[in-house]
Amino acid sequence: MSLSNAGDWISVTVHSKAPAAQDIVTLELISADAQPLPAFSAGSHIELELPNGLVRPYSLCNDPSERHRYQIGVLLDPASRGGSRSVHDDLSVGGTLRIRSPRNHFALTPDAPALLLAGGIGITPILCMAEALSAAEAPFVLHYCTRSADRTAFLSRLRSAAYADCVRFHFDDGDAVQAFDAEAVLSNPGDSTHLYVCGPKGYMDAVIATARRLGWRDEKIHFEYFAGAAAQQASDGSFEVRLARSGRVLRIAADRTVVQALAEHGVEIPVSCEQGVCCTCITRVLGGIPEHRDLYFSDAEKAQNDQFTPCCSRALSPMLVLDL
Ligand code: FES
Image 1 (tube, helix red, strand yellow):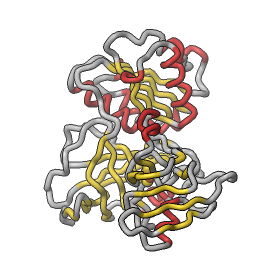
Image 2 (image 1 turned 90 degrees about the vertical axis):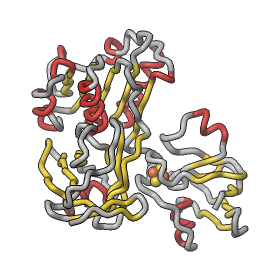
Image 3 (image 1 turned 60 degrees about the vertical axis):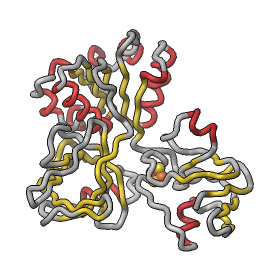
């Protein structure tokens, strides 16, 4: 299969697919015509256009110096809305699909010591960071928290890595000696160390809150959520949006997201995660006050109310004016 670009979309082949742990598969995606893939940096993700039509973001977990392949690890989410289920069931070796070129919203700070904290499948961008830090001979420690050894993706890879001495495993079903102690791990922010966190929301919220309480400054705390809150809540009401370029006014019903409601009127906004974590759908707000439900913008960015994620965010004002 040849590598082709359509915009920033690339056609790739599934070169390998293998179990990495219970309910987790790894996939290698390659160019079949020996063209190098676009370069990426640690913390990057790609978006996969899946056979069921959904587009979903997944972090790259291979060595970022590699150009011949992208590697991802995907956990089968029991509450899958179709993304991880399609990766597990519909993608097979030799199959082709389109991906979007790597983007990075979770970049390493060059030349700075790092404390890497991963929970569950949040290991994927963190693993890539460990590879990059090891190659740069930068000091780091990686704490990897999982439920049990058989749910720990990349266990043998980490145990045999050149940087294995920098990795600490914490299994929920292990003995107390190896249990993850956030207070102890985060007790010394230091002057130059940066903290990187990826994992389930509860894990991340607890780690980030502990870090802030123990004196870590916000500019040293880096994180990437891979699953957001539900887009809709029982208490949601309706509101209107005005499309500034055409003047059209559309009602967003209580049981519709802005993306869904606009699509029903022929206005397509590109989406990927549909949970407020990937930024694919970001839309400029020219008037009104959004109710931000994403996990992407900082508090300061949200306070400006000049952009929002229509895949999940709603409105605090009766109307939003969008730059559409
Ligand atoms: Fe990912 Fe909206 S589609 S933030």
